[in-house]
Length: 566
Image 1: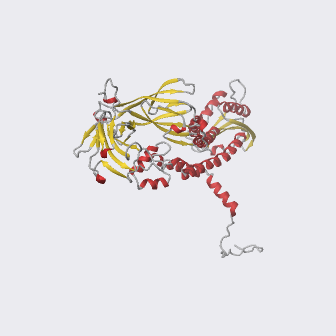
Image 2: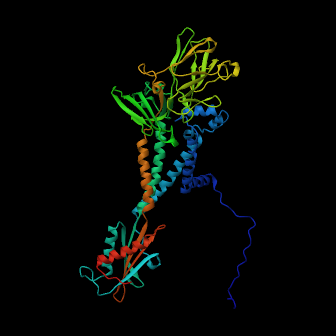
Image 3: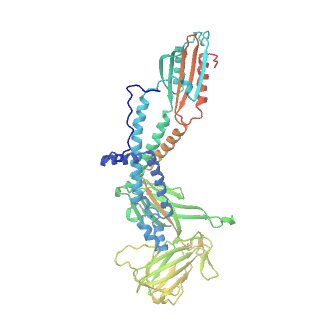
C-alpha cells in the first residue's frame, strides 16, 4: 500500500541516557507523606494491634501500680533478671515510654482517619442520589416487566410511566431510601425513573466505632491522670482511713491532688476463707473469700459492707477490691528483763496454694543489737522425709512458725527506704538457722502461745495465740488473717463504659447494615406498552441484593394491582 505524499515518518525514540528525573519532595513533601501514612486506616489498625501486644507484658510481670508486693518478691526471686526488666520498664508497662508512644501515635492516627471521613460522609448525606444508569440490565440484580396498555391500577386509572414511578417513589421512601426522580428520553421512548439509596448508617456506624475508640483512649488517659491507685494490708481488727499516709503504697496520676481523697474510714471486722473439702480432685482449693467491713463516711455514719473477689466496695468515689489474703502471726519480742520491745501482727506472703508463707520481722530498737528474722509460716505443718516442713492445707489445722534469726545492722539507720518484706543480711550474723555463718542453733520453731529464748541472751520471742480466752484451743482464731485491699479511683470510668458500648453498637451497625442503591425505571414504548425495570447495586458484598430487588418489584406490582410478565 502506498503512503500519502505528505506522510512524515517520526524519528524512532531514543533511549534516555540521563536517567529518570524524580521530583524532589522537600521537607514539606516528606512531612505530608509521613502524615498520610500515619493517618491511613492500615496504620491505625496496625497500631491498635501493636498496642494490644504491648499490653501483654503487663499480664506476665507484676506491676508496681497494682501489685507492689509482687514486684518486691520478683526482685527477691530473680536478682539478676529483675534489674534488666526494670530498665525496660516491664514493671511499669502502662506508664512506660514505649507504651505511651504507641498510645499517642494511635490517638493521632485515629483522629487523622476520622476527621476526613466524617467530612466526606456529611457531604454524602447532603448530596442527591445519583442519576439512573442508562443500561440497568448490566447490573448484577435486575428485573424487567411489561404492562399491557389495557391494564389499570387499583383505582381503575390507566397505568402510565409517571404514575408507576410516583408509586415506586413512595414505596422506596417508606422503605427507608433516599429518593430522587429523573426524567428524559431514551432510545426506546420516554423514560421516567426513581433513584434511591440507603445504608448510610453503615458508614455512620463505622465512624461511631472509630470515634468511640478515640473516646476510650482519651477517657483512659484523663482517668489515669486524675485518678490514683493504692494498696493497704489490713489485719482483722485494724482500721484504714482514706489519707495518703495510711496507704502501704500509693500511685497517683500526673494531675492528682490530695483534694481527690474523699474522707471515709474502714475497719476489717472479719475475714473468712472457704476451701473445698468434698471433692478429692480439688481438695483444699479456695471456693470463696469474704471480707466483712464497717465503713464510716465523713459524717461518721457507720455502714456494714462485704467485699468479695470481683465484687468491690464502692465508697467515696473509690472502688475497693479484695486483692489477696494470708496470715499475720502476732509476734512479741521481749528484752532480757521481760520488757516488750516489739509486739504486732506481721503479714506473711503466701508462696503456694497451701499458704506456706514467707515473712520478715525487724526489731531495730530495745535489744542489745538490731535483730532481723526471716520466717516461714505453715498453716497445716507436716514433716517431709527430708526433715523439712511443708503445709498440706491452707486452713489452720497445725500452725507452726519457723524463724531464722540474725543480729547486726538492719541497714535502716541512714533513712533509706527498705521493703518490710525483705531482709538485707549483708551486715548481719545468723544466730539461729541452718548453721551458716557460724550459727550453732537450728531455726526457732514456734506454735501459737509458745515462747522461746533468743540466742546470745538477746531476750525472748512469743508466737501469740489470739484465740479468745474462753476457747484458747480454737485453732481457726489462733492466728490473725489479713486482707490485701486495692483502692482504685477512676473519675472517667463511666465515660469508658459509654464509649465501649458505642464501640459495640457502631461495629454491629457497620457489619450488618448493607449499603445499597436501587433504581426503578418506567419506559413508555411507542406501541403503548409500559416497561418497568428494577435494578440494584451494592457497595461491597451483599448476598441479599437480588432478593431485595425482587421484593421491591413484587411490592410495587402489588401496590399497583398489576399482573406483571417478564
